[in-house]
Length: 340
Image (cartoon, rainbow, N blue to C red):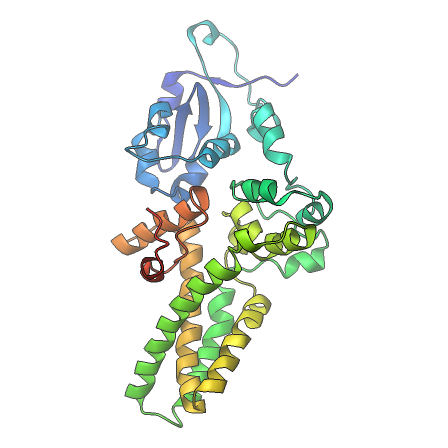
């Protein structure tokens, strides 16, 4: 039988820095070190209660509101129990209480939707989820070490995993090509103006794709075909939002999404303008995907980045049907979808 590890308040109090930060919630001890800089509200909120009991703070709606998903996520960081007076003499063991350090009931409830140890797409296809249940569950974020399998076949999995640096490697040459082609038609000043227009246009495209393609929840048919397509397109990102290898778009996916926009440019604009505006649009996409990765895994510097990190992660952890802007809130303000 595996025994629980117990920690005295003095043991927990030693872990209060960014190198190692533990907190107590409802008598359970959690090692939050790996989550510190991923915390939607910023690392300072966790460090403020490092080595202490954070139970009241977790439920304080005036200080930093926490969703149900936030409490579920704590199970991933569970390391033991706070020792009470009658347990102080109980010998400690380095083993955890349950598989992966999770409470048994939480582990059961959390994994019954989709088992992240098995190919996930097949489960969505075969389990015949009702749409209401699927939408509720897929928007409760889960965390797992590494990247959970989507298809199960190594070759197919390879195409779903994209390191962040692939984005500038693939698309900056495309930007350079279009700038070069535009230079045969326009002056540098004119190209710069149209390039900026392209970036602005991308921010609108970013908003439109996120809201009207990735979040068509109300219009989605209640059948396995639609739910499986939703999960593959964007549902998996809400289900496992901290998967660092699935935060930027695979080149094949973005190529498929960008070609209709590029062809639309060619229908309505002269070819020289297409190149200049297209360069800005592709550059806007690069900024978007790199920022998206950074909002999930970077340590934010500057007021705007810090604000957008909290804003975007609130979209994941609190309200998935608002707050669609990634690089800015501009179009959320215009279309009244600001997440407050």
